[in-house]
Length: 307
Image (cartoon, rainbow, N blue to C red; front, side, top):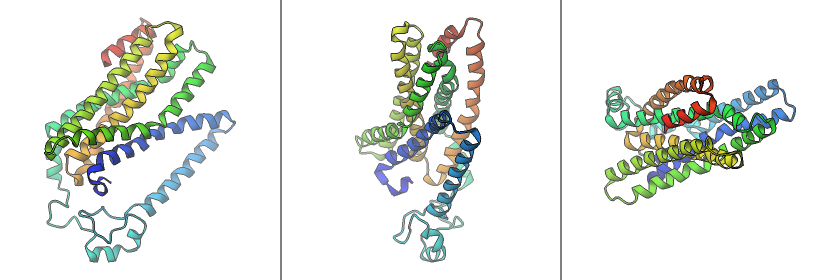
């Protein structure tokens, strides 16, 4: 998608990641619908129906072939691309990857070289840690709220609904990261410096938000009952900003610093590594819940380790 938007690509990439990020509020909607009397069967049938709609959208609102570069006047980003495939090929708006033009074709040897670059390796190390911090918060959220609400059902339900609603605003938070990246990049005349420094700055900002998230959680474990709700609110808020910033920064990093024709492979590889290492949140959660020193003490220590 960034090929359509030039200098605004960071804003577009982060916005699309924000939409993906906000989709997690679906669980809050399901919770509300279930509390209104819907059955699990009805909920899952509804999800299947919506998934079918997304399949139709993919088939009829996305191009049949790769988006060409440079874009031609005849190319249309719609169902017409399916209808006029032959005409588009004859006009040259669709380029086969059998072409000798290396700029248009993805070569596995080039992908391997990019996978082994220091930029890609160290970005993924950062992404693994940041993603693990996010996944651990989500996996421990229910236990975390239950403890801080003293197992009061109304309190737990209220904070769960609040956090679900808050997740919807990821679509608004993510473009702020895109605007920040574009702002930093605009300060440099040299394109290489603009790309490197803007992408690096976004990782630093996301890391700072992660530090604020852990710090807020640490303070929460130390305050009395009169102040704890303030820090539950701030911790949930920092989590939304942190999560949106992490995924937006990672996507923009891959989209900006690496060849666009390799974006799918590099981005997919990065997401796969983060997904697999995200399973480490399970033993971390087990440690927190089963520690002989009790939940609060081990939660306090786990935040120190993550911080």
